[in-house]
Length: 90
Image 1 (cartoon, rainbow, N blue to C red):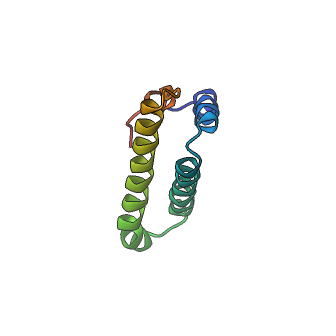
Image 2 (image 1 turned 135 degrees about the horizontal axis):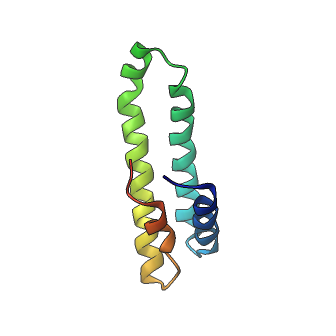
């Protein structure tokens, strides 16, 4: 489980990256996914069924941008330890 301190550390490392466009895209995808997850708790079962594919796509997009930023930071010798800290948990 991701702790607050680990999340804060990940955020710090990401903010230090010179990959401005990818950092913005990562935040955008994180917000899109978090909006869906926040609404999830108050949705009916039927609403969840309707939104399930959108939730999955939003999550996959977020993970994809994480992986792209991770690779780009690594090839530019930036500290990308945040990706391992974030983990692969769905």
